[in-house]
Length: 403
Image 1 (cartoon, rainbow, N blue to C red):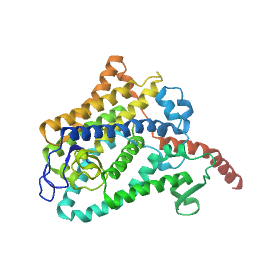
Image 2 (image 1 turned 45 degrees about the vertical axis):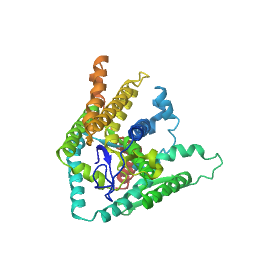
Image 3 (image 1 turned 180 degrees about the vertical axis):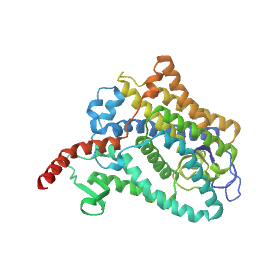
Image 4 (image 1 turned 90 degrees about the vertical axis):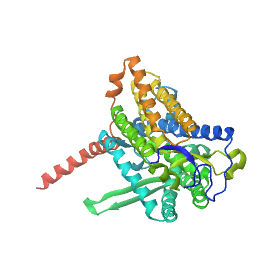
C-alpha cells in the first residue's frame, strides 16, 4: 500500500533533477500551492461521495426504511435504484477486528515484496504486467463509479436491454454459482466510455488518466469496504499508523516503490503545470491508502449518524473536517522539512480524536463504540435460507410420504 505524501521526480531521479541529468527549474510558489490544493480536493471527493454511496450499499435492500434521515440521505435515496441487485460482488466487504489486526502485516509483506521485485527484476517488465492488470481493474472501477451519474443522461426512450453473465461450477444438486452478474445496455455504454480512458492510460500513462483511475479506485474502496464497528476502525487506523511511520521514516522502501510503481495507486498533480501545461512532469503525489483508510472510517461514522435518527450528521462532518486538517498539516510539514511524510501520522489522530472528543462532549461515547454493523452478505444469505425454508420443508414432507 502506498501511503506517503511526497514529491515525485520521474522515477528514481533525485529531487529537483530529471532522469536525464539536466537541471530542473524550481517550482514556483503558485505551482506548488496549486498542486497541493488540487491533491487535497481530489482526496476529499471520493471520501465524501464514497461515504454517501456506502449508505446505499449497506442498506440497499431496505432503503425505504432509511428515508427521512436528513439531506445527506435524501441525496442517497434519489440514487437508490441505480445498480440495485446488479451483482453480489457489489455487496460491501465487511472488515472485522481480526482482519484489521492482520492488515498492516499483510500490507508490509506486500510492500516489501514489491520493493524486492523492483530491485531484482527489470522495472520495465514488472510495470508492463502491472499496467495490464490495472488497465482491466481501472476500467471496471471507473465504469462502476460513473454509472449512477451517466444514467441521468440517458433519454427515457433509450433501448435498454438486460443481460446476465452466469458462471457455475458442478452440476445438478452440486451446482454452485461462481459469478452471477446482471447488467444492461447502459452499463455497457459506461464500460465503453471507461475503456477509452483505459486505452489512454495504457498508451500514454498520462497523469489525468492515472487520476481518473485513482479516484475511481478510492471511491469504490470507500463505498464497498465497510468496518463493522468503531473499535475495528481504531485497530485498523492504529496499526497502519505504525506501518506508515516505519516504512516512510525507518526505510526508503515505501517512497522507492511509490516512485517506481507505474500504476494508478496514487494521485498526482504537477507542480509545474503553470509553466508546462498538460505536459508537466514535476509531480506531487498522494497514496490512495491515505484516502481509502481514513475514508472507510469516515463512512462508518456517517452510517452511525444515520443510525442515531437525530436528523444530524455531526460525526461525519467532524471527521471530514478532521481529515482536511490532518492532510493540510501533512502538506505543511512536508513543505517545511522537504521530506516525504507518512500522512497517516497526522490523519489517524485527527480522524479518531476529533469524533471521540465530540462524543465525549455529547455523552455518546458508549453509543459510538457499541454501534455494530452486520455483514450484508450474511444477512442476504440468512434471508435466502428463510425464503427457501418452506420449499425445503415441503420436499422433506414429500420424501417422508414416499418412504
